[in-house]
Image (cartoon, rainbow, N blue to C red):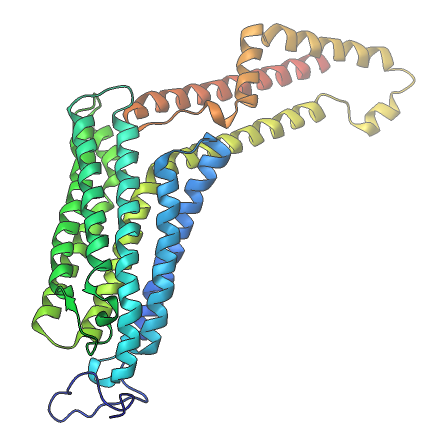
Length: 399
C-alpha cells in the first residue's frame, strides 16, 4: 500500500480526495499569524524600551514576557509550516504519509504550548503582584501567590502529559508502533477548560485588588481598563472549548484543529499584551516629558535671540548707541535676577534635568502621579510667565 496516495480519512459521500489543489485555511493562518506576531512584538518591544531606557530595571515578569514572545514566535513558525504542509486542509485531502508528518510536528507544538502559555500567564500574575502587593502581605498577596502556584502546577502537569502522551512517543504519529497512549483530544478539552478558568481568574484578580484600593470609582475603572483586555482572552478560550468539543464529535481533525490552533496563538498574544499594558503609561509620560523639555529649550533659544538688537539696527547705531545698548543689556539682566529667584531657578533646573529613573508609576499611586504631572504643568506655566514678563520689561526699557 502506498501511504502517499491513501487519504488519512474516508471522505464524505460524493466527495473525492484532492491532494493537488484542495480547499484550505491558509489565508486565515497567514493573516492571523502576521497580526498576532506584529502586535506581540510591538507591545513587548515597548515594554523592553521602558525597562531599558526609563526604569532601567528588570524583574521576573519581564523575562517571562520575553520568553513567552520567543515561544510564541517558535510555535507560530512551526504551525505555519505544518499548515502549509497540509494541516490547513480537510483530513480526507491529506495523505496518510502527510498526516504522519503533521502529527509528529503537532506533538512538538503540544509540548511547546504549555511552557509558553505558563510564561505568559505568570508574567501577568507577577506583574499584578508587584503592582498591588508592594510591601504588604495581606489577603490580596496570598491570593496572588496561590494563583501563581496553581498555574505553575497546572501547566507543568500539562507539559508532562503531552510529553508522555504515548509510550513510546513514535506511536503518536505512527499507530503501527506497539505501545500505549492517552486520549489527546480529551486532554485538550480538559486543558481548554482549565485554561479558561485561568483566564477568568487573571481578569477578576486585578479587578478585586483594584476594588480594595483607596481610589475614586473613576480611577478604579481607569486602572482596571489596563487589565480589561484580558476579557478578550476569556472569549477566545470559550470558543476554543467549543472547537475542542467539535474535535471529539467530528472526525475532520485537521480542519477543526487548525481553527483551534489559530485561537491558541491569539489567546497567547492577548495574554502577552495584557502583561505589557501597565508599561504604556510610563512610555506615554516619558515621551510627553521629552516633548515639554524640547519646548522649554526652544522657548529659551527664542528668548536669547529676542534679547539682542537686530544686526542691521546695531550696525547703524554702532558709533552712537554702544553705551545705550550696554545699559539695556544690564536692565535685562537685572530683570532676570529679579524674577528668577533661587526657588524658581531650582524648579526650572529640576524640570529640565529630571531623569527617567525618577519617574515612579504604579496603578495604586496613579492619583498621586497625576498630581505630580499637574505640578510640572504649573512649573512650565510659571516659567513661561517669567519669560513673558522679562520680554515685556525689555520692551519697556527700550521704549
